[in-house]
Image (cartoon, rainbow, N blue to C red; front, side, top):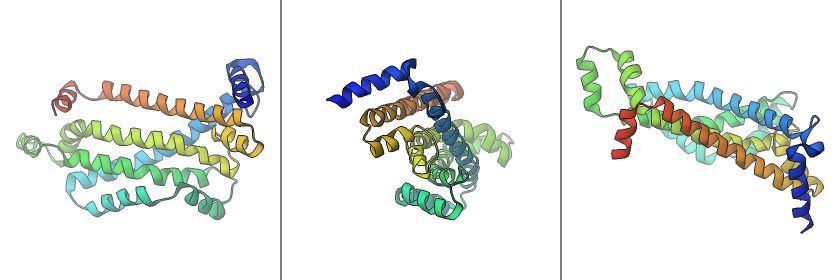
Length: 230
């Protein structure tokens, strides 16, 4: 099992004892590239999906958009989209990677935002209107806080998907942790393949933990307790 020995050596490099830790192809650089792709794609998806989900969930108009979005999430092939946008836009920028990632990230956020708003107890909504709150105030002060756990769940699902899928950025010659996997397969450097895969998994776990912490900080104790009772 020479590849295991090589992998352990690669881990030694990971802890700062070799080329894998330094230079333009080093782990810090690849990790930063992966982070940049992921954050940009997720941020754009949130800016698109959350307002649309809030609007549709609050007004009840345009539900077909949510249905279509949910179906597209199951049907869109990541690699096919990537190749298509590379052919259309070239490889001189990061957009051939970012656009497919955004398209894949929007549906979970949109669907969960819509379901979160729509699922708020109608009595709670009526009580808010009875207190004299207007449409926008009801949405911002009542509906969003109650729906926040589902909204954050959609963001978390998309974030993990983006972190995993950003690996395909390597197909376009761009960076990211996927370089270790793609280049490793190309050169039969299986230690690099395993090392890159482990880093991507760890990255996804960190994202999961961060979103869990964000939910604990941002969701009110009353809403959290209500979810536990359910």
